[in-house]
Length: 466
Image 1 (cartoon, rainbow, N blue to C red):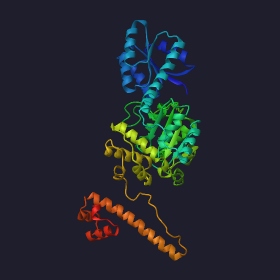
Image 2 (cartoon, rainbow, N blue to C red):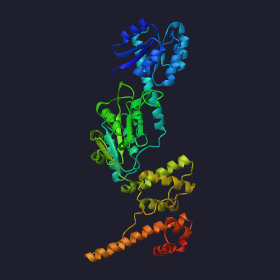
Image 3 (tube, helix red, strand yellow):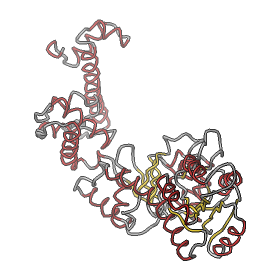
Image 4 (cartoon, helix red, strand yellow):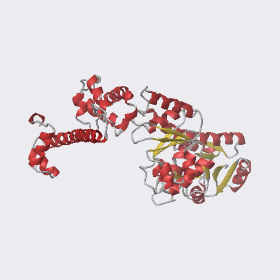
């Protein structure tokens, strides 16, 4: 679709001449006064505005420029002036105009100004986004175990082309980090990486967030706003928790994947989407498709290059390196002395199952670094926050069962052993919470005080534990 130019000038002969000059390469719409200009601005969503500096209606060009910039600071405005008003044109540039041209412009010069204005607009989007990216803590994937090496190889391979990627994995495994690494290794690395958490955006606003909107297109739309796909031009859009996007937005997203185009809400103008799309989810999208909760055509468009990020419990060899990395980051952020982590503390981290994955590990290290207060992190700093009942404790079988009776007996003994571990974790939590007050602890959980004492005795819970 051609670039659309709005010409606002009270000289109809000039409008006719400039339209003839530009119409082969651009779509031109025109207005002879500011009121008609604003109407076309809202209806046609022009890419560039050519504005007469000396309009003869109730407002001059400077006032119109100010109003345009108040409503939409992204659309470039090129002022049209005569030589006697160059000083005023310079003032207009200070107020946000992109440039100015004379009433008898050189065609090639005018085309150059239009092209430059559009590039500057996109550069504003990119600069803002790249500044945000430069402040990010997302550096690299930490770890060298075989599973992690395989993940890194897959990332390097998929980064070399522009096909859509679907990243799956449990919450907290680092799906966004994987997406950022793909962008960093791609030929789009110097362009924006726009991350969108689909689960955090209200369903009635997701289309506006992705595709943008025009002023007045819905309640609260007080100005035109570009969407993430428009801002990410030539870069990467990361759709986190894609399973949460509603059906209406799924239809539009499917069109972006198929046709590489979209419209802002309230606009009929089609925009091109030159972006690489990476999506992620912690849910089974195929299962959602079977339940009619997710479009099957969109699923197959997303699942071109699948990457499954393993949970931390499957790559425990990476925990020491991850812990050291997070300790260094937390010490930098909190302005603390970094004294390392003891071997015993690392052993304890290795025993834990990490249901919250890498995100949980990072949170535990942050807390431990605060408790350590400049000293080395020990088991005490770690153990004080680990959730009870999540340890990988060994189950020892002294003798392999030879018959059904022996199997039943061994299973019974193991079951009792597991029960004691869970009960002891429960007691440990309860006694600490109520500062050793058995009566309060028993009342809080609805158990008889004497029965709580019996449980403590059965679990070997001594007075020294209180």
